[in-house]
Length: 517
Image 1 (cartoon, one colour):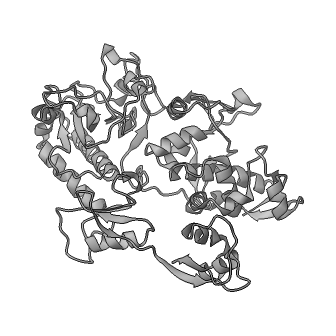
Image 2 (cartoon, helix red, strand yellow):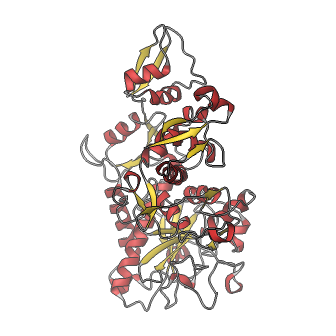
Image 3 (cartoon, rainbow, N blue to C red):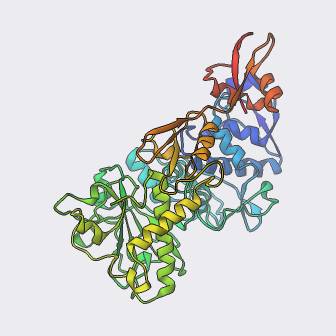
């Protein structure tokens, strides 16, 4: 698909002239995404922006509209297209994907911020679309608490909200689903099928689970803003016969259902108590089981009090499982499985070993260790269904091993050790995988420039070599031409620039360049 664009920016005119030009829509988007959102944003936010921008442009391309390169349509900068590899990757990863409503491509709008409340288009402009609704946007509100941003028209996706959600583990399809109510994500510019996400949320580098985000921005714990370096996960259960998430999580986001008593925990001190965990697991209004993240994972929660040896609030991420009457095996198995998957996700994110002493513990175990108050949860519930914290930890370990990339072949496996591939031990967010087989971890590091293999203690056991060949520049060569010849597409010259840390397109005869394989 192509778009027709009239250039008005000086840099664009210098490249294309001032007459309307026809560009491939995907190449056009490589100059739109970094002009509309930060190149440094989390990849899931860049993907969400790419889909929104593609839907906006494709709708107009099909109508024969000649757009320009300003925010009257969408900002476009050819210079950014050439030096924004992460935005280009987001465009490539979502190529052809657009948002549709009742089989028709939507008129897709977005803005920098909505002020914490998504807007109906009819309340802002003359036309009302069914996929733009009024509802609280906790992501936007959380983002603006961290860094104040002036609200714009507020119709469609909030860019600051999308960036905040992405960095807190929400995948791009869920971000889009929140901001464009009732839409579906289709491939091939709306002519293909629905994009398959495996029927479950899968955050970047994460584990499948039914994960949602509604940060408790009104809770005093969140507003305190204290952070921790997570050393483990503490499992709680609520101790009340109420499996519904809406009892604890609010306000209603359209999935939770309305809490008529308004006694959820998204308020300063719920019930007069200083209390807040990082997540809840329980039932949505339709009866399905889900996880709701309500604090950033690295915030210091108020979940376990303290003991003679300190407080687990300073070391452990926490979540509550909503109890029922303790006798429903079907409900228990669902929340137990969801809890296992959440722990796998957190273990991957922070490089935690679930079998290491004190890493994954119940509240009652925290009390025995002297870091929590005297509560029995979840030890009073699990045995009703033949489970314990020991079986729980073992299930997390097994699931973590199953979900690790490349855990077969290439050498003998030591199942007691996981080799993690990261840029640095401290930078858990860059982790590419956790491997039982060292040779497979080495192979992963070799395929990712700047990555090393770390053992359980954080010691470097192997530093990868970037997967590249070399090329000696000849007279008359250009980066575009080299990329065309060696990589099959001139547009990939930005990869050569990035690999060689080039700050301009200028090269010289005799220069040796690294070429990605």
